[in-house]
Image (tube, rainbow, N blue to C red):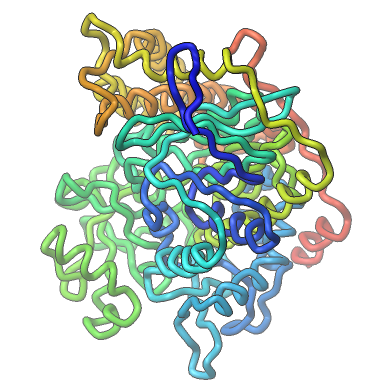
Length: 581
């Protein structure tokens, strides 16, 4: 259907639930809604199957107790809270620990092929920060198998998928989210999606950094789309640096080396051949939490004990070729094909890489509702579960548990309310003009590519793993300078196949996210998890009781509020007291 506006035509599509993002969380939400007979539209900026979920290689953290029978939800809950340094949402952590076994068995029933124990149960491997062997896995390609399984399930429903389609704005009416405006990346044609509820499942924003495991899609569209319509964000200062990314050759710098390598017994050594983790966590060694191992790797290199290409050595040669091909085949081929290194014969060179964001849209633990009616969020774009540091493997179980809850929450919201999804034509046309503006400037302005490149360098220098006030303030000044220049972006060519135009959209998200991260990092004056302030000696007891909540203020600027964390109820607090005995 074509609608004539004052300037631009657009197509109209209508669904009960619009899901933005086609990774694990988005697909799981779609299954919930579609199987109940709701009309579901799924919008993905990339191709189906290309989600960042496939990068989670090591496994799904869930207390099945198949390998270590003493494991249970209580221990998983406590591990998650301890790793998050207790600023996580305890109710989300409780729900996650209790429900993840059912979600994994459900995935198995839908056809996911897991590695098996000799008795035929789903196998589980050890991972950093987990008390027991807990990660249900498919070799070192767990995320890929998860996406394959969920995708096949979705394609068996009536859900409609819109690939290579970029959302530019969420649309509101009477204070509720009632759809979105998007364009197709190939043709530049606009689509007005009308919906009674929207589930945001767009993942993270690693592309604000130069060295990241994230691919081009990780530009934080969803978190800023939500922020722009008034949603609260939480824990935005917390960015996770995965301890092990590739360092050589330069073209693959930052590419993920799964924690499964350490889970299978990989050893970290410096240039002197010393197994240095005994200096940082003598009890857990290589299986310490990611924040600790990443800082250890960073510190060894900074101290001059790094490898030839500026990393540290990760050695799995003791498994031998057969063992590696059985348990870590993807890693073998990745190093052989990209770096011409045989990891069964020599160690890998690795260094921390930006991998994941703990913060995001603040959601209700039960329904995944944001603070804006009609908008739900799940997966990496949502904050709360992981606190100051995420445990490896908790991301995949997060997607399944809260993807389902987001789908269920959206359905309940639709059933409980009446909905009008028509919005003011003038608002639509204003957004269409804003999106097209970079193409219509006659004079040559700022290049979106150069702005993104400069931003990545600023964030690497000023908001990396180790932070201090002077550097953060300098970084904020640079980010605000880029924000001013953003208004002058111009892009040559037409809308057809125009990556410069797409990057012009991305840069707006990236610069806004960077400003939020730097501002919240300035506020959290302590060392806690991923927020490591060199100008403070350790954690601050008072700051351990608060989250930093970000909202867009009346002037459109970043507003930051300190909000006290609700005390943990007795049945959960008692677990930690019992553990001390």
